[in-house]
Image (cartoon, rainbow, N blue to C red; front, top):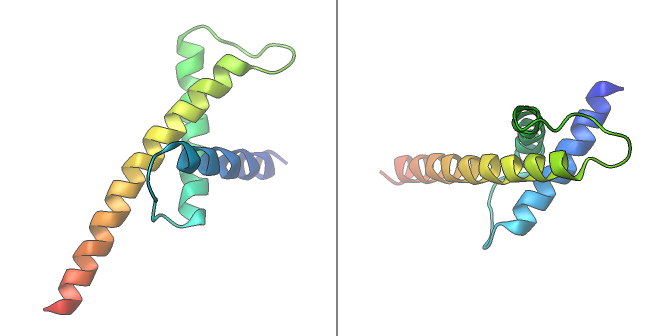
Length: 94
């Protein structure tokens, strides 16, 4: 059940990160989901570093850190994905 929740949270965070970032992102949905999963893990670690532990109810502080981390990870993945796609396209043209 833990993996299912990780995929669901990663999917939601990946979509939210893509929606917040201005412009069109070209990364596929599966990559956005993985980026969201990574963002959730990194966001949890940052929240723990700031002393935000699990609380009863909704952990808004932790979720904000997760979304912020997911945005950064999606931005990095977008840059790498676009660069790799461009390099592949230029290699075929030669």
